[in-house]
Length: 213
Length: 213
Picture 1: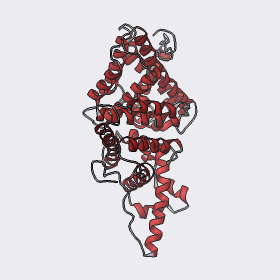
Picture 2: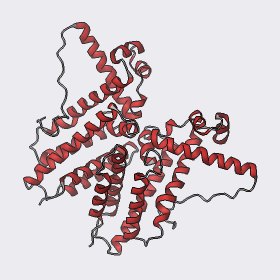
Picture 3: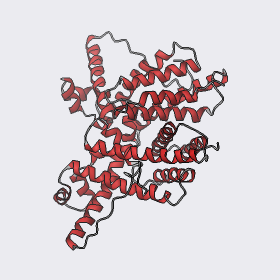
């Protein structure tokens, strides 16, 4: 992803590991985190515990604890892992489309796909974690909000380009990005509770913002 | 509140109790439930336990268990109690304004007040509980969704009246109600994490829907 206001939404560079023991450790870490993000998407980040991850992954509780040390470190690692998967699934595929309106449409379609055939078992990772963490200020909430804001900035950025290029009618870019994001979040909730009209409704609403000038 | 599509959003009639022992039980129940809805607004309905309520209320765990029998019954009673308080705070005060546009504006203002100086410690009760319960199908989730749908139906109902009375421009009532509600929910989240622009932004967006024909 290009640098700029949205550069926080980039995948972290994988570190090249040649030492076999370290490689095994890195793979174990990856396996544990893949379970962790699914659990958090269902039950929030408080539901993450070394014991539960051990039960789910056939690894020992002590082994997992050695990898992550504290529950907070585990929660932060899960957020990093979720962001990498999100970037890989929603942000990077959209980079092949031209900036402005086409990329905006691609981002929204990849986002809807991300919750329709959910990347995380419980749907959007951040929508599950933030309502739980919003009464717990600290580095975990900060990390969740940094990702959320970065996503809304990405929407604003492409909306602004689409307006400047006269691909869509003049609008208040910040208000529109907030509204589109609000609708996407509400669509995530609607899908989780089996509302059959959710996807079609989301697309109709988005179309309302992206009208020709 | 008038009967009709939104009649689920009415306060339950208080039962007149004259027996002193029963009266004391009813008061205890009310005290416990007031704590319960605050806990649930912060930590969701899974955070409710007889032990935690006992610690918060100087009542015995056994006494609280006798009142509610099961955790599910406690959760359902908390939802009923939250709805009564919501109706009293948001729905009933708006009934003094004429139906259509004035009542719609009143409902939205009372709703924003409900989350700005929060009626429940953690902000909107349903927005805290639904993301947690959406992976747990059953009567608790059903009760939460029934209330949510009833609220969106109330918005639709007044929007439709406002359109019919030509108080606002023609619009797709269901889409607009869904969008207004999405923005209100996102505003609840924004307030919880201390976003200073939240209230003004919500009002600007709502104004965009309620323009003259």
